[in-house]
Amino acid sequence: MTDNSQEHDTVTLIDYRAIAGYTPHTTQPQVVFTIEIKSHHIKKSLLSKFDSMVNKALKKPENLRASPEISKNPLLSRIAYYTLALMSQAGFPVLSPMRLLKASPLQKQVTLSIPTLDSNPAPALIAITESIILINKILKGSSSDHTESLPKLEKIINKIKPYAPTGVNSQRFITAAHKADIPWRKVGQNTFQFGWGHKARWLDSSFTDKTPVLAGALVRDKHAASAVLDSLGIPVSKNQLVKNKNQALKAASSLGYPVVVKPSNLDGGRGVFPGLHTPEQVSEAYDETSQLPSPILVEKHFTGEDYRIQVFQGEVFWVTHRIPGGVFGNGKMTIKELLSTLNQDPERGAQGGSTLLCTIELNKEALSLIKEQGMTLETIPKNGCFVRLRRAANVSSGGTPVPIPIEQVHPDNIDLAIRVARLLRLDLAGIDLLIPDIKTSWIQSGASICEVNAQPQLYPHLPAYLLQKIVPDTGRIPIICLLGDILQKPWFKQLLSSLKNSGYNPGIASTNSLWINDQEVSCTKNSFFKHMLAIATDPSVNIAIIIIEDTKHPPVDLAFDKVDLCFVSDTETAASKIADDILPAYKYIAQFSQEVTISTSMSKAWPDQNAAPLAPEELYKKIETLANRLSI
Image 1 (spheres, rainbow, N blue to C red):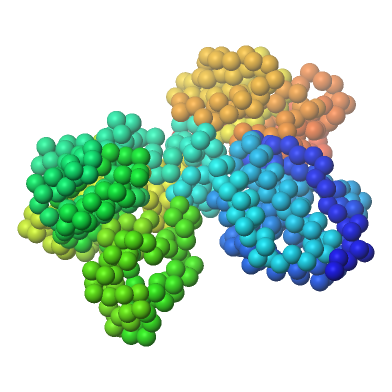
Image 2 (cartoon, helix red, strand yellow; image 1 turned 135 degrees about the horizontal axis):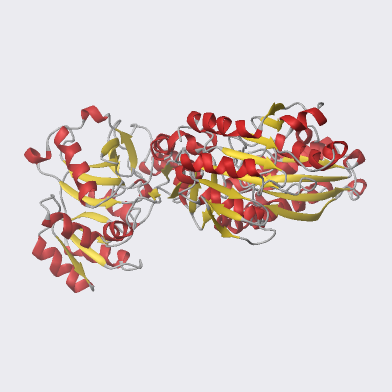
């Protein structure tokens, strides 16, 4: 029965706008929403109902939080929870809290900021709109059970997903950067920048900006990469490209059983069928693999354990033993029950999701393997008995990666992986090695490089490790903000001359102009944010200088999250008007700045401001000290 007394309790979205840069105390772009709340008098029973629905339908993100002003409000806190939880489950890293920016008396109308990835408001708009719809249903006493909302919830998440980073690597790199205080921004598609100016690096998942396009394209073609490695004396299995089933059967016969059928240019273990011993198995595998958009490869099967050796800049930093998807018996449960229990592990989720491991579907391959092992789904395996449900050991098909201490890997196998990455011109690579025992030299036991990945999937903690290697000194360069019309000031020209003579290459952004070193490269009016973004991105810039000329109307946002030093310059304005002219920009930029100084002459006319006086000619020494501290 609907509670009519609650029908007036409604929430309405009034307006929204995207902010592409940083505002004070934020660490990423945001979307600002204004909502109207007609009443805050809500029954606790209705709020409990809301909590029950959301908690059962959504996984709670680790860092999900809101500012204290929102958390204290029962209604706003739930809007924040549902909105951020939807975005998190769709693949958005939840790094910053939702914040309350403004509120009318009694919070009848409030303005909220939601963290996002870039200037596109769509994902946050979808999430908060659905949050408000659900809240309104609850407030009206809807009797819907949470299970009825699940199908719709999946559709909502699927609407948000296209805007999220692709793959868990990108999410983990962004999260690791946030924790390490490394600035980041979305460049486009799935490319993200970490750091500023000449320290900045670009990553697409684990594909770095130092990986040659030619190398990436080559290793994606397994047939071509195998041929290159074979020609250079690297151990690989013989293989043949096939165009139809008859060619696949002939190739299997000529190579000799057992064989592998797999796509030639797809990743993630899709369509890979190793250990095929009969023409019937090859025929079935070909039918499955031919459904995928890729040429098909038939390869001689190498019997051995499957290892992933990850290399970065000539150093092996991680090794895992990849165990094929399957279950271990306990002497009590059937194979069907064991698989159901395994898939309930919170570490396992759908392929392409954010979990470390993937669930194992009971498909044709699994049923065939169970039969080959002389079992059925109702068989109760003995305690410790491993029942294989996948031929390939890829994590994406349900396999389990077990870390191996690098010191346990034979040096010859380490050298082989490093040499493969070097020969293929890869700075970061995942080398898949089949070998009987990783502790024994491949020269003695034999081995096969079955695949090379230029964009390998990384264990959850590895992006943080790699960022320390890829982005030096947290990726930060000195950011100097100057307030006032100073471009033509003699002292400013002397400052630039001193910086240039010392080998620095400043990028200068103002409202109407952009300078890289001594050259003006843009004079577009009212393009301050674009000019800031240009020097943040330009790999030749090692000192950024941003100039706010219109000090009465400071910008809405900056392209930088922090300012290291703010200097308020001398002005022609009468002393009595200095505060009126400069104070808005001064208060605004001080929220970003580590240190604020004002010119010595201004300190006399403006003594009540908490900033150290500094002569303009001494500014260079301040900047040089800052540059040395940041290892420029």
